[in-house]
Image 1: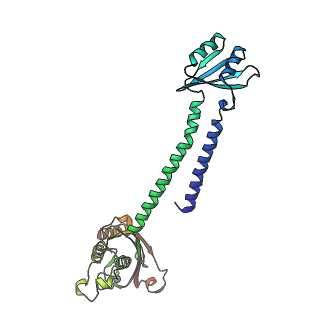
Image 2: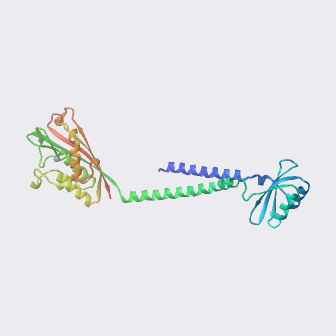
Image 3: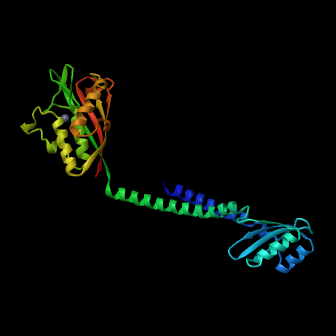
Length: 306
Ligand SMILES: [Zn+2]
């Protein structure tokens, strides 16, 4: 979450809380608070004068809240508080006077009031939880940023093609009348991939690790280079995140062989084949590649440090 959406969320919750508080204040203004506050004596005088038709009594711990309506002026509310001790005698007196007495343990609207009063509290708790979660997330992100990094490397290779040599691309031998000229098996894709991986890890290039002057590598299967590169990456705590490659050749068509190539490369690198993406291009008949005299590959590799 970026800072602007964080601010928006903050404002949203603030508005919700404000709205909740306003609603609470509105509902808290119950009829009781708008009623005439009268004394016990005034109340009894009204009862004796027949000015009270019915009352509702709300018992609490030490007192009774009594609410009712004046007959004159009609509809006007009054409220009086009685001590708990006085209540039984008053109730009896009221009934003698024909006043309808209702006793309610809980105000009729109390559940709603309780709910709405609790709403700001619920919102406040929700807001606090939201803030805590955001803080944890940003701390987690900071931990991630500190503990891992992403590195990218680029690799390029080109080999001349000559008649009568095996064409090996991505560890797979393809049926074709020409093949690359090279010290090893001349696998352009494996070589460019190796360079991209070594470059991303800051480990030099393929020539540093497998010099073409070394007879050990004469005719070598280039997948061995990748297996070695895998070990070098592991030593530096790098993992391969993704590989994207383009192989450029006029002929043959490479696409149908990609699944096998991906499998072979992935096996050599010890990753799943979905981390390896391959594309094929021709050079539209232009220059050495276009004339079928060479094959080339470009590879970009992404590593993450563990
Ligand atoms: Zn090469």
